[in-house]
Image 1 (cartoon, rainbow, N blue to C red):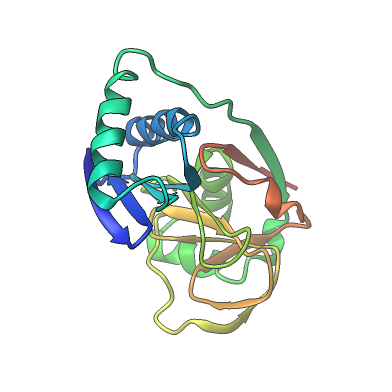
Image 2: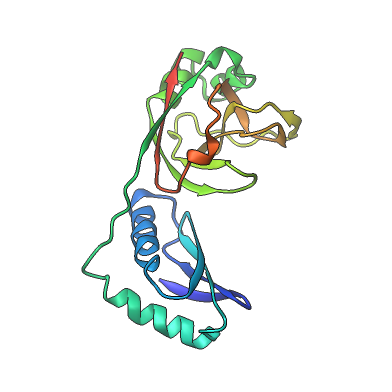
Length: 203
């Protein structure tokens, strides 16, 4: 783990730079532990890091780093776990604008693409790009597909899409270059939290 300055009142804890369950669990455990750390204004976990926004009335850059390093040593052998929830999302794959293209790219049938996408349990690794946009991983390698060469000017809200080894749902109309596999009426995007499990249910 490394600690680096991010701004005048924030720093970032960096873990191993990989998208995998082991690193995510370490991020979440540290995130839960830091919730009890005094004079922290905000914490933002993501992939393999945690952004820490702290009160400069109580810490300098040097003192906050030393205090956090010392504090976290007490949690080395006492893992703090975060309760995660499972969110099931119904998907109409008949509305997948790029389903045929993804199938052809991998020399699969449309049914195989749907089965591979909907049979995977995804974890929420980060929330960003826009409010409620959850980055879900990992898409099975058999259907992992690069982004579109030319992004669409408008991707409809509710579009279920993939890009490389991640999946996501567009929480509002937006420009975007992800491959659209289907559509969902799901609208509770504020429910997503880093660490949650997401399952897509084919209609």
